[in-house]
Length: 104
Image (cartoon, rainbow, N blue to C red):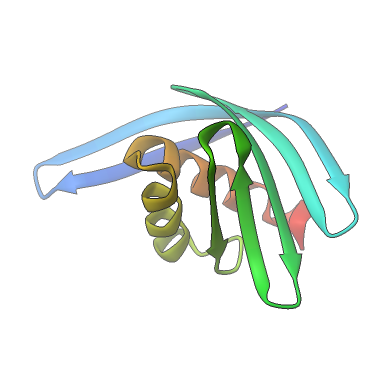
């Protein structure tokens, strides 16, 4: 189990912080499967292909292309848009960054 911190700047006066925990981490060849417990429980698949990095969140019917696992700026935007939820998209992006050492 790995704990990680998240934050999002809603506007210049409002910074929100929360924590998450990654469990059930399974590396399977070119992809990794894990579960995030935070404000929601999120099951995630992240991997690489010849076209680049991707994330898939089946229960949310969401998937998207990613930048490198450590690129929070790009990945937060793509995941928040795909999941149609800023907090959960940001949480997944921070979790992916936390697992960058496993994913690479």
